[in-house]
Image 1 (cartoon, rainbow, N blue to C red):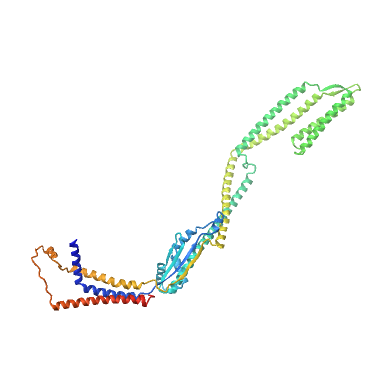
Image 2: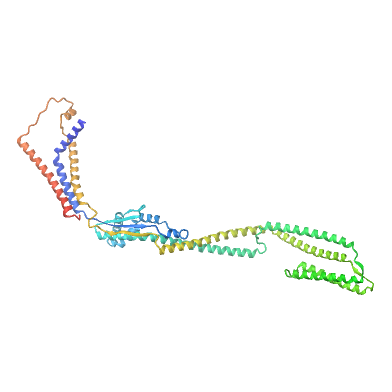
Length: 513
């Protein structure tokens, strides 16, 4: 510890011997520095504060009806690009600063200086922003901040409206494209239906389902035809066992005619009921007319036979035989109808059998056309809904303000310049000169070192020290030394007085500095 202190004291004594160098350097640096501080141009800072309110009452009301822009993201992007090159050029035009730049190099320097001097602070959760700019002309600084404030408030709204306009244009273009595709598919479907009339896929499951249904209907018709054929055979057997004519007394002859009249009336009423639903060409109407004609013929025969018989007894047809004949006729008509139906089903099945290779291709083509048509239709409907949403969003954006800018402090310039801080610089200059002088003096002592004590001599020579000789100063030497110390003190005092004079001048006499 003692060695370290002793070494420091040795350095201090060595620097003290170079004190005039320290004083001269301090004076030189102070004079040059004070002149530099005096010649510095004042720079005035203009500031403005604006609050961005993104809490709109329309946002919860229009939720799900209109697109809500991300205002926080827009404001964040705008704050990051406030000092961008396009905005800087716009500021230069708005403040007429671009008139000073005559050459491309001057313009580049102007834009670079503007971008470097613009400051935007604040944001985060408070949404309170401070726009600041420094210039040696306070009026220019104020106009620049005003221009930046205008750009700040207009760019976010203009950007949102431009995005909505671009979105609406894109949706309109897509709507036209999908409308053209939809019309094309509709024409293709119309042409497909016209080309494949009769073989279009139905709603019952397609070609194979239809073929299966026809097969089932054909089997059912064949079964019913077999049943009708068996029933006719049984009726024919019963008819063969009955006698066609029976002998009856005369009083009973009128009963048979009355029964025939009732039967004919019932069949005629049945024909009238069937005509209400079908035409005269229907098989049931044809069959019933044939039965009526037979009954009329039978009635005529009975009347003729009744007139030809003697007074005691007459020959009359057997009613059972007559009923069986009518049933056989009905069975024949029913079999004819069933045969026609079987033939029709067979023809349909044969037609489908011939189309077994073509119909599936038609169904596949129809399915593909409908799939594309449904996709285009769904996309077109979705685009229509989005167009309405975009239109409503555009109305909201153009007629209301989703973001409100409140200027808390308009652009203003204090009378005191923001830079330079001359009192501080005046104080810093002489201390900087003293520090530089001390460094130079120390370096000189290291270039030409001197021995300050016995320990240094012993360390250098490794020779035992036997004694020391004390230097006795003369009166002249002491007077010269005292005079030198006084001059040094006067020089240091003069530096201090000059420093105080500078501080008093800039703080008291010239406070605007």
